[in-house]
Image (cartoon, rainbow, N blue to C red; front, side):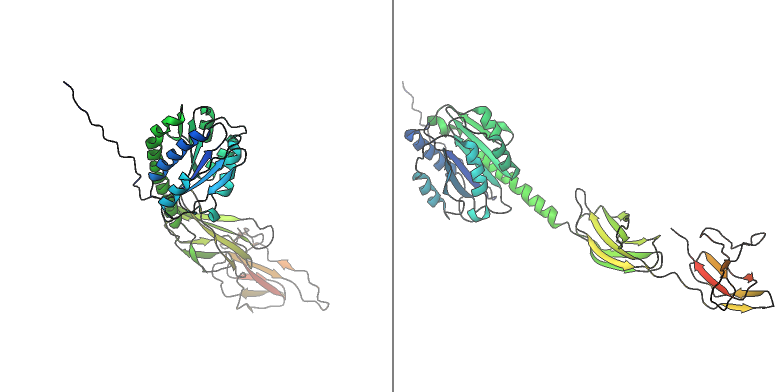
Length: 396
């Protein structure tokens, strides 16, 4: 008794992700492959192309062939439909020559993954190498340059390919990016695994790229710099909040004159105003406000402001004047720490020997030495005919 088993062909894998990619295939066309085996390479390429939604606004596929010297068979933007790409694959000529894989890797970096060749910004980049032998030049630096440029590399080796070299070329991990088969006749056995992994990695790359873009879109510099409450020793710096999750703001300020030493004030990301203190009077300051994020900082919001002069004493009045004494009083100045009282006799030649009122015995409240002179708030007694009163503020 015989039983009959019918085998149905398994449907080939089709990548259904909404993500699109720029895929460049680099095919070894050296003499070691041979014309008969090159037909099998064409069949492999047809299956590879058929796995993706190919079009000018979908996944784009370009191809370069190499031996001693590489050449572009078609650029990423050469065809607008999958059928056109498949026709190009069926008519791909066999080149022949040596095996200079390193040179070919550099060639596709400089010629295929370029905007003028159809490579798009913000789209996953994939390179697929198909080779049957060991390269006659160094492959490591060119492969690293491609990976550094954001190209994810897959390496397919056939027959006499050097597996260590394939690992050196491909992106990590090796178990998903390196494929090696013993003969061209069984290349079809790896097509499903390869296209599935490429599809998955395109989708993951797309999410990573969009995630980075979204993060960049929600970051930026603070805006609308406003400087207010300006005094001789301080002013307030205010700004509109930067977008996104700001951890803190750095307010950097320094005198505009050459050699001015930068200082900074750091506030929480929820704060948008700070009073900068201990400044020099009548000095122009340059300011820069930075929004600080978890792993980066924004461009600076810049501005400048000049502090005011120290306040002047007004309303000086001399009274109780005798032949050798007099009293002096003046209007108080808000915010000062004290007053310096200087006096000198008036002379016909204009010269004077200016002196400072000494601190009296039993120092009364209000005297202080912090400013480098003697200070008294309020009333003092002097014994000369010329008087100068200066207000003073604390020195930073």
